[in-house]
Amino acid sequence: QKRIVVVGAGMAGVQTAVALREQGFRGSLVLLGAERHPPYDRPPLSKAVLLGKAEGSAFDVDFEALGVDLRLGTEAVGVRPADHEIDTVRGAVPYDALVLATGAHPVTLPGTVGAPGVHLLRTLDDAHRLRPVLDAQSDVVVVGAGWIGAEFTTAAREAGCRVTVVEAADRPLAGTMPAGIAGPMAAWYTEGGAELLTQARVAAVEPGAVLLADGRRVPAGAVVVGIGARPATAWLEGSGIALGPDGSVTADAHLRTSAPDVYAVGDCASFPSRRYGRRLLVHHWDNALQGPRAVAANILGGTPLVYDPVPYFWSEQFGRFVQYIGHHADADSMIWRGDAAGPSWSVCWLRDGALVALLAVGRARDLAQGRKLVEAGAALDPVLAADPSVPLKAA
Ligand code: FAD
Image (tube, rainbow, N blue to C red; front, side):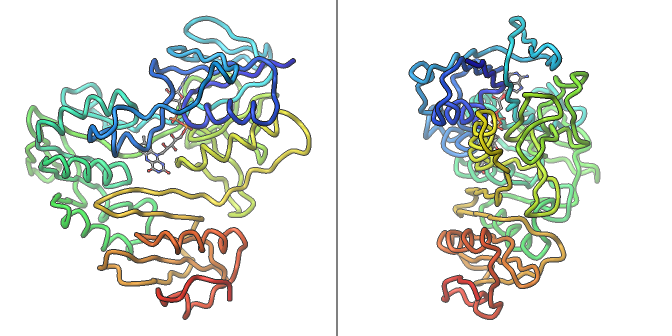
C-alpha cells in the first residue's frame, strides 16, 4: 500500500485526508501541520472567534478514527522529489504521493513586522491576540479595505472600538470589484460607524498612532494589517517544483505539480481554468473544499479528473451577507438587480449574453439560481435580469 503525505493541516489538507479515506484509500496517511493547534477553520476567525462568541473553530474530524497520522508542530522545510522525501523540522518523511496544501501567509506592511501593536489576521493565535484589543475598545487603524479589513472592521465596531480604515486605492476591494460597486460598499463603512480614508498610505507606525504619508496622524492603540495573502511556498524554493510569479505552485488541470507524484491544492496552488481561459489562484474556502476531492481522485487513479470549478465565496460584513460566484473581467457587461443603496441587491456580469458571474448582497436566492446558470453558461435576458422581482432564469 502506498504512503501519502499531506503538508499543511488547514482546510485543504484536512479535506484531502478526508477525501482520500472517503474514496477508499487504505494505505498510510500522514498529515503534517506547522501550527500546534488541532486543525481549525479560518472564516470564523474574523467573525465569531474574534468577538469571543466562539472559543475556536476546530474541524469536527476524528483523525484517529480516520487512520490519519496527524503530526502538529511539524513544519516542512524542503522537498527532494528525486528521493520521494520531504524534510521537516523533525526529520525526513518519505512519500509515494505528496500533497502540498500549505495555504498562504498574509502580506506584511513594510517596516512594521514585529512592531508592538501591529497585528495580522490569519491564524487562531492572531485572533486570540486581537481579542483583548476588542475587549479594551481600543482605537484601531485597519490597513486595507479588502475582505479581511471589512470583516475585522465589522467585528471591531460591534465591540465598540473606534476604527479608521486606511486604503491606498480610491475605493474598497479595488483589486476584485469594479468602481461602480465600490461606491455603495464604501458607504457601508460610514454607516457602520468607521472612518474610511481612501488614497491614503501609512508612512510609519508610532507608539499610539499611525502617521500617514500626507502628514495626518491617526490615533491607534492597535493596527491591523489586511493587505492580502501570498502562497506559503518559500520552503519549496530549490526543490525544482515550479512556482509562478505570484508565488503559487503552478499545478496542471489535474492539480499535479511539475514533480512526479506531487500535487498541490488550496490557497498555495494555481491551476489553469479552461472555463475562464486563464490560470486562477483562488484564496477562498470553497476552493479548499472542492480541490481536495479532485486531488484524492487523481492520486487514487482511474480517469484523471479535471479541476475547473466555478469559484465561489462569501463574506459577512456590516450586517450584510455578501456572496460571489463565477469570475468576471472588466469587459463584461454589468446588470444591476435592485437598488445599491438598499439592504439587498445583486449584480450580474454577462459575456456574449451568458451569465459569467454574480454578486449577491442579502439575496441568497439570486446566488443559488445564478450558480446553476453560471455553471451551465446560460444566456440571460438583460431586461428580465434587471428586475429583482423576477427570478433569474435562462433566456
Ligand atoms: P490555510 O487555511 O492557510 O492552511 C494551510 C496550513 O498549512 C496552515 O495551517 C499552515 O500553518 C500550514 N503550513 C504552512 N506552511 C507549512 C509548512 N511548511 N509545513 C507544514 N505546515 C505548513 N473564505 C471565504 O470563502 N469566505 C470567508 O468568509 C472567509 N473568511 C476568512 C477569514 C479569515 C480570517 C481568513 C484568514 C481567511 C478567510 N477565508 C474565507 C479564506 C479561507 O479561509 C482560505 O481560502 C482557506 O483557509 C484556505 O485553506 P488552505 O488549507 O489552502 O490554507
